[in-house]
Length: 460
Image (cartoon, rainbow, N blue to C red; front, side, top):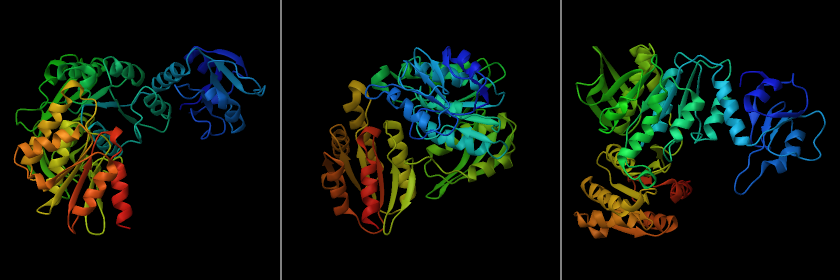
């Protein structure tokens, strides 16, 4: 955070300054009393099952110089700054926007139904070739996490990449009002959150809120393979760059060569042509990389700088993470799941296996609404056609995947329906042979990482 006096903080968050020294300087905040650092400003957040006001005194004893509170807390030292506000979350968001507005740097916002975290990581690593770059970490992509990222922005940073999650209409619009992006990447429009928004058109409309925040001097990089994006493109006042596989697009890939080690391809962009090797499995990551390449070129990066950046990539945890154990290879893609991302993960499984036995352990895909059974069943059809040798499903919805696979030719003796991760791991353990490649994937709520942890423990 840029250094800011208590008096300015008070004005920025609309607080009543109850006590303390308005000249005190702050350059950091915390919402966790257990991780407070000396001199920081502590925001006492409230939730359904907690109230950080109960830890305000502890925060001061741990080093906090100031407190942002919704109610007066007894027994506070007289020297601590106290800011009284109606809503500490709203105050956190207001300060985050104030801090962001102090910087004139590239701010790239990334959203999409699939691939936004991978794309955010790719964008940040390319930017870091030239700029000291701050990016969203972990799952800090919502109304709390995004402000925390913005408040980490300080004078040392030269670029910012933020990931934006979306659970309903208006959310992206709100997050953009905090982050003030001047560039956008929309990876794709798919079935994620269909249960919340009802149709893919509605999802596109909600994701497209990002485009209305891009200034005339900015740009948006959009996936032309998502047909619903074209209508949304008109909402952008800045330059629009379409990417994909077709040769009539602003940026596209040709001569794509996929292997277990990654993807090699040639980029064509406005008369420029150069070769890329991306050390990530999965053909879908070629599209993610294209969006980043388009943004980097628009920001003035050379082909050499882009190539150097993409070669450095390491992804956030549990996203197509390849784990080589003693006798088997595991693809850990347990972060989340929807129909598009599962299909992409199955393609990655085929690429990594290269002739070895392929085992898919798949859990329920959540938040798909009334069409959930149909989506799971249709995915079963895809599984049957991808050459997966064994399928293990976990959960009531995933049972429909198993039925879909068997109804489309997959041998029933190679399909196993399980109710729990423990049962799924037990069946997997019975099947495993040396050389097998195992994909584990499911929605966050299914906690499929438990199977990954069990596999690692078994191989140590």
